[in-house]
Length: 123
Length: 230
Image (tube, rainbow over all chains, first blue to last red; front, side):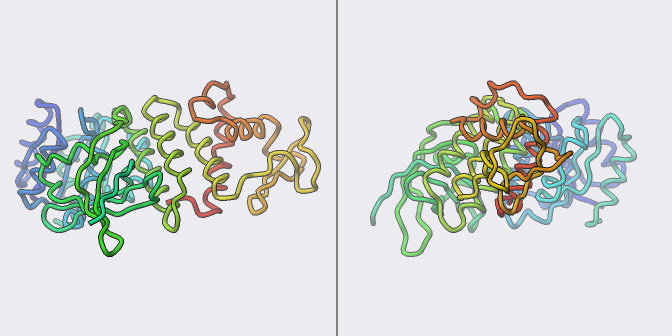
């Protein structure tokens, strides 16, 4: 299964997602900010990044551009799991940032979130 | 070694070894420079704050033998921190940086720095993105020598208030055509954008949404044809 970096600023939601993803057999590292996510990427070997892009200080788009500016992190698979509607993430950004899926939180069940990780090409 | 002091805006960053970064910086007086920033990947680096994206920085570097200088110090001069409070603005700002990176591949005139600075400032001040796009497009075209002819049509006739036009992108000129998509209000918006010294000034003008959208689409088409898109 996958080594997941979950970046979710909300404590309650993060806890629920972490448990669900772990129950599906994944190893989950949960961080609440973009800066701590960069640290985690530096220290851990991550297969899949599950990311909420609405965050304080540095948002998820900034985090993704930062990640993609490092050649050694280009292989990290990215699933956006966010409160922002998929239509607001333009195609160019998806392509440039290697975003595999955009899941709108309100429409996505925990099972679908786990499926998104399984569907990721790395697994 | 010779030290150079510049005011610059970081266009791109990439990793270089374990802890170093290569910065591509657009400067006003020295064009585009590539600098090695040593140790900036470490979070506590003293230089880290001065090399953020969407900011203007005072940079001191030593020029190397090749085209790669070494950054000695940096100081944040102006940070456009409001940009990243909005996802749409953030995405557009990255797109703008990439475009400038591409446009200035061969030569970076001082005008490009000023244009980028004004554009980031407008994004920071929450000027509608559509207005910024139109303003930026006509000014980029103008610097590149591709200013659309906003006075005469393809036949050399003065553009008329009552007529409809299509746009000949290749010749950057309007051509009279019944049922053409462009009328006087579209042409006026392009003229205003060209005359406005900043996107903020253009935003003072009330423009009907369909006109703005249509002009924006035309501007994108012009930029694409002339190779401005990243």
